[in-house]
Amino acid sequence: MHLTQKPSGDFPIRYANKMKINQRILRWTLFVTALAGGLFLLNSAFFCAWVSGGPPNDYPKAWLHQSYIYFGYSGALIATGIMSFVGLRDQFNWKKSIVFYLWILFTIYCLAGPIIRKQILIDKCLDSGGKWDELHFVCKVK
Image (cartoon, rainbow, N blue to C red; front, side, top):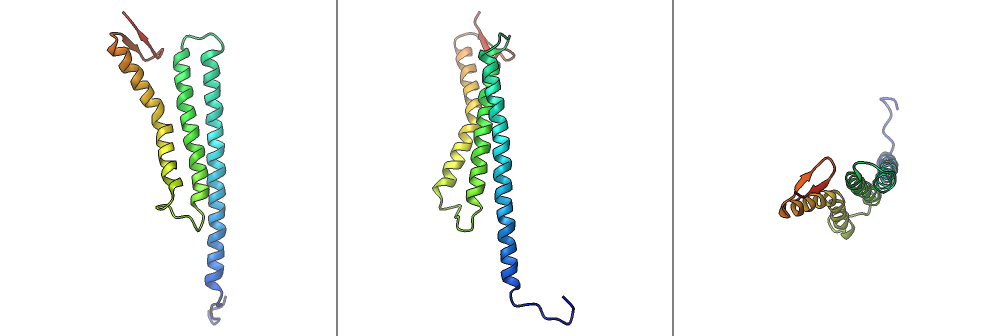
């Protein structure tokens, strides 16, 4: 556009269309990235669960706990990808959506679940008079 030309009247429409395209690209990029990361962590969770019960090893309980951690991370990441895809629509209202609050609760549950489980196991061990072995993730009773 030359300096002597006036801007066209459809400038706001072109800008709005460009924003919608950028928003679509962002929605799909976040969704695909979060889904790929979540599936990778889910694969790691299945591998750790297999190692905990499959071949003989010295740390089966530690592998099982690591499986719970990866499973929680994968659930939170996949849910975040879905929520970002749904939440970045034009019509979506974050504050009035029950889906948004369910997503927050589910993500907190996925991330805090393995930590709470570990603390409960440690408390049970210490309450019974045992000693917690962090390396093997077991309670050693005297």
